[in-house]
Image (spheres, rainbow, N blue to C red):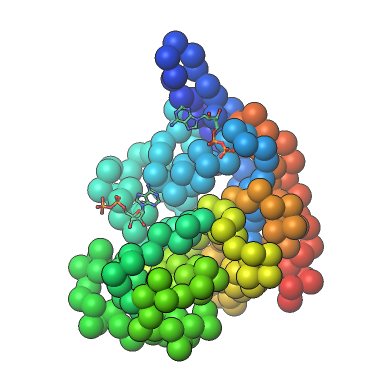
Length: 231
Ligand code: ADP
Ligand code: ADP
């Protein structure tokens, strides 16, 4: 991201949600985005995920300038290069755990039956092999978030964006989800970046890098050394 500006016009006023942010993110890292409410964290995450576009500045992913992609290419980028994880899990209530994990494949035109082996393998990876046939209502919050992590990995994207993934979990369950996200980022050879917006200082401190936004600007950017502690 180079010198990224995103403004919102509300009534006659202009709010600069992001005000000249320059930042470079590398795969293999678990990165947290922190800062007070209104600092620009959600805007930042939406721009990274190509859900929104900057007013000026550049957002490059590999050799691609995201804003220069067509709508269709951006949609393709979201489906294949990004996995999204949410505070309230966003699982489909009528589908089982494995079917929820398979959804990204369905959106890609792959049939459920064909997607099943990969979905089951991912559920196993997040420690939920035994819940494959359970619906969301039959699972705990921590289990639902594990399903969501598995779903985010379905297309094997290089970028995972998590918006307050522990915000609706008790601290012990939240810590286990953070461990899982760290594993996802540190997976040998995956080169995957996990970017998490969080209000929780302890959650942020467990990540490799803490980026602090304030009033739409980059206030600090610190590598914590937590990666070595986690292993
Ligand atoms: P955070 O996620 O850190 O709370 P946001 O990115 O949501 O911050 O918001 C940054 C600023 O942009 C805030 O002042 C917010 O009110 C404003 N903002 C965010 N989204 C919109 C929108 N859709 N319309 C108008 N203003 C917005
Ligand atoms: P299409 O254009 O192919 O119908 P979209 O571009 O709307 O699909 O969405 C592609 C992917 O981007 C979705 O599968 C979803 O994971 C993600 N996505 C789309 N909109 C949002 C959103 N508002 N918040 C989070 N993720 C989204």
